[in-house]
Length: 222
Image (cartoon, rainbow, N blue to C red; front, side, top):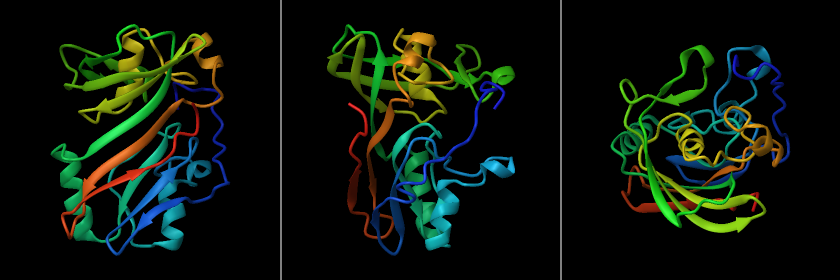
């Protein structure tokens, strides 16, 4: 947490656990902003989505993650074959993801793409940064949904799944996500009480039936 020296972990308790869908092979959850996906190193960072789910579904395992400050749809596997099958879909980019974000300023282009390679900013971890020599290829598509007072509601579609990709890519075009404690400058940070980034939609193929399934969670900010 070196990039956030004043950070105090206060995970939300209501709702404690929001299950969107469940069958014998997977469980889909709507993670609130402020809750870690997996436990941190410190004892006070043990409360997380993984541990909350384990209390009711002990076999559940993490397949992918959302940043602590990001809310929205996340999938966990309930058995080993399902874990392998879903993991491969993420690795081979066969999943479809859509995020909603409110960013600082008015985005001029109605839609566009950010194609900038990312790497960990090691002295300031967990922050990431653009690095054209050592960074991994990273691609995000964006589309303007509506304009507010010095802000824009956008739909973000990550093609790659790098850590903090959407946050750094929007910052790189001059439109940091509101409420971003890691990347937003003071004015953009002060415009929201939480990171305005929400995983609205995730589509996968069921690990057993191979049927395409799409899960949605309403955006908690507008």
